[in-house]
Amino acid sequence: MVKYVQRELTKTIVNDFFKGKIIVLVGPRQVGKTTLIKSILSKYNAVVEFVSDNPTDRNKLENRDFEQLDRLIGDKKIIFIDEAQRIVNAGQTLKLLVDNYQSEKQIIATGSSSLNLLSNTQEPLTGRKFVYELFGFSLREIYPDMNLLDIEKSLTDLLVFGSYPEVFLTTNNRQRLLTDIAESYLYKDILELEQVRNPAVLNKLLSAVALQIGSEVSLSELSSLVGLDIKTIERYIDLLEKNYVLFRLPPYYSNQRKTLSKLNKIYFYDLGIRNVLINNLNSLELRNDQGALWENFLILERLKYRKVNFINANQYFWRTYDGAEIDLVEEKQGKLFGYEFKWGKERTAPTSWLKYPRSEYKLINKNNFTDFLR
Image (cartoon, rainbow, N blue to C red; front, top):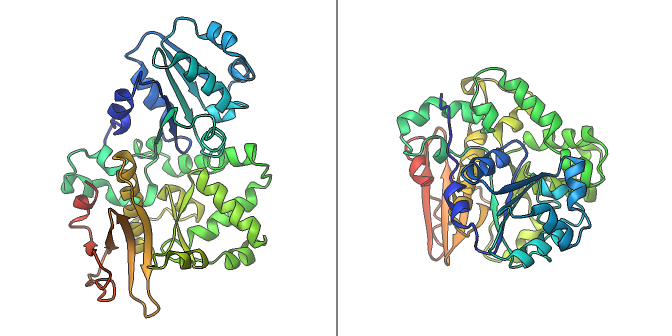
């Protein structure tokens, strides 16, 4: 079992220090944002830290002018604000600091959700921030050399228990840890910041979605299952996406205006959370959803790879009326890259896909998936 995992973002974040920009690190709760920043800052002496979950620290930063903030910070060169989304008018506070300090001091803000920290700081921090997203461990972080034989030892565990750091780094009580994350942290910010008062409804919605990964999801069907109107279902899914619980994959059409009227697929940012929501942490050989887990895993790992390497690409799935399909389409630099993920049986490229100009196709399976992620 791996005992220490070096996060890929470490060097990138350090290289962006003292460039006159706020470093903003966002991602789900419990994925190690605070741990990552503190590991970086352990090499620096002049650091002042504010933990915004602490009301006393939060009060120090809210509705203050620069002179008051400057007295708090003193001669410290690095200002670290943890869980900054909890600060009222966080964007204005951060803007005051970066505009006055420029590259003289480095400001770092973390947040467990893009609901407040990114959405509510977008205007005041335009051009003033570097944004990074941190998720559960990536396969490249766990196995930097991407040796297939080593990866095979933990691959099935990753498909069942996911990649939350605390869960991955232990062999004991993993079901209990996942249940605790799902019950205590999963949508904490939604309940506290977005006036959603019924976690049972969110849980019911997530459980319904969890049973449909790899399939197109109908909002009207979810509405009937959960007992909420379609607009509320759409709002909840949007909140869950901004809270890094799940993400949507739209269909690809050459006429992109059509995509707005078609069904999306929905995947989870962590498969352990998905599996605990449906109360199924059975080993892989006892499951009938191996293909769906493999698909979710590879799409998520590819997303992590693109994020950490700052690769811009639109992502879709593709399906025709006659049943031809491709699990992931990446549109970048004027080209279409189609990837089909297979845990078991093989298949050839759909002939209708190859008719698209500047299109490519690749089958990704257990023998070649490491090449897809590097």
